[in-house]
Image (tube, rainbow, N blue to C red; front, top):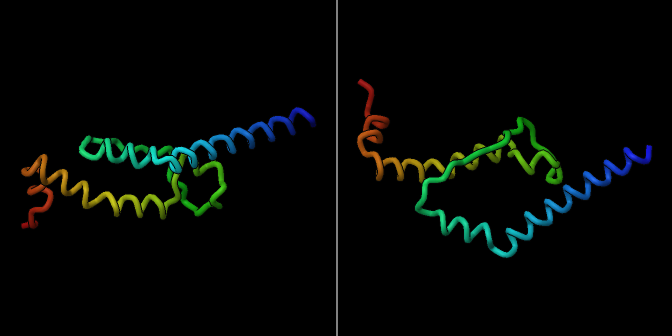
Length: 102
């Protein structure tokens, strides 16, 4: 019983430390700095998973995944940027994707 309790509290401590680090990085502005630096570079967007249901904000799964509503919102925000980048870097592909059928 005691070893199970230690494993559970150890896992909770690990999650708490991860959350603290993530909040600290955001607080000191490292995310903003990284976005500024990578603004004109090709980036790959990766997800460990998209959760089908909404989760409580303290759910550990949210460290590696996003909810379906978050994913949809992020895709909507990215679409204009992707279209702009495609139009600028590959005009022929952009025209063929947006050509009227017929």
